Amino acid sequence: CLITFFVFIQSEDTQQQIIRETFHLVSKRDENVCNFLEGGLLIGGSDNKLIYRHYATLYFVFCVDSSESELGILDLIQVFVETLDKCFENVCELDLIFHVDKVHNILAEMVMGGMVLETNMNEIVTQIDAQNKLEKSETFIFQSPRQDR
Image (cartoon, rainbow, N blue to C red):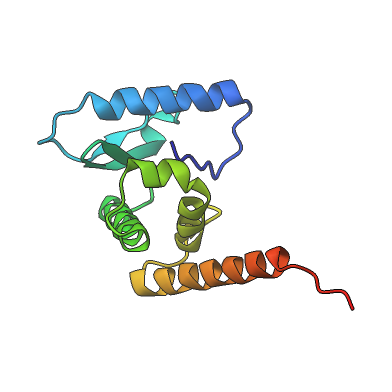
């Protein structure tokens, strides 16, 4: 699973407990209910909100403080998923598993340090394409046989 914390969490055990609690809170909800809920005890209770979207077998969950706009975060999740879909051509679970670095790069183009930087999908895709071209050119340079004279 793709997880990014933008606040310091003391231990990995606490991180894992937060993930379990989040999954428990979100996965038990009916499909026809609101996509916002108060964070659990580990997440910060009523000061934090879980905002999520459920696509097929995937859950995309953002935990934000109470000052964030729920609809704004839902839009951010939608842009993230549509960007993943563009970058991977019909994204699926396996893309997220086998290309976790690329998924993190896409998220980093959108959110840095907990602040939303970019929501224009075309701009995000342009930047990711530029990164991919750079990686391919670096790979080519490092794999080229040396021709000593």
